[in-house]
Length: 316
Image (cartoon, rainbow, N blue to C red; front, side, top):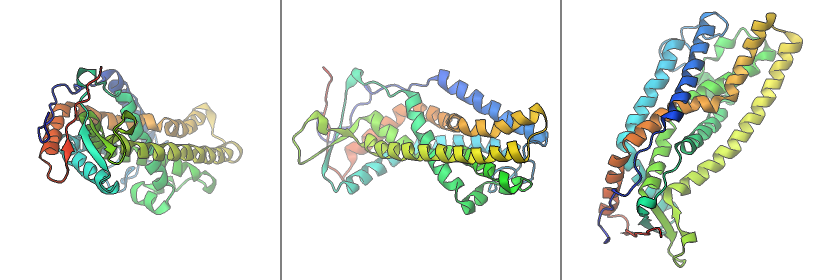
């Protein structure tokens, strides 16, 4: 294939949507939402104010959860149409950061190209969203701007640590509606086969790296560190809260004791709940895969900013 020709997408991986993963995730999210709404209507959860859970959004708790799905579909639409443009931006950014020390190629593995498992792709955005949510939830001014903290105003000062945990959960759900805008361009670069290698080194397989993977490695580092820190501090806050619950204000009856466990359980499985919005966006991304592969490939072939070589590296 000559330089300037658009790489063919006929041999690229096909759209793959694992409904066995998506459906159980959505069921878990819907069940959690339903439990939260029921307990709020029973005056057990303090989300019955007119402000609901999210301060910037209109409506009560019912509308808050509807907004999460609205934002997810809107983000999915953005990824559907804008992924090629965003991928081109990150490609340019990579060249700028690396000071043009890399050559770029389209790696065509033909029918041997293996798709990246859907579950693995969705986990990283979840953990990155968790790290961002944890950072925000520990800054009181940011938390108050997003989360209706006055709903917990009736709690004793010793029990205020639970506010941070609940803020972490709901801010995470909100961030997860938008985080895929960052990841969809990187997924597209992976699926297109855009790779790079240092110009100053001899061409060796070990020198070749995917441009999308270059970004994802940095995000993996952030996700790993922030996730560990988030859970350590959440455990500490939970211990402080339970000291208050057990020794200062013990619950009345078994039912109330179980209810006290619900927020902690929700925070523990918060990454699974965040997969709800992310899985919706990933389905839309997969639906647009062939269209965006062709669009990004055309951009590569017509780019005046780079000398792009189309290199077919066929698997044996």
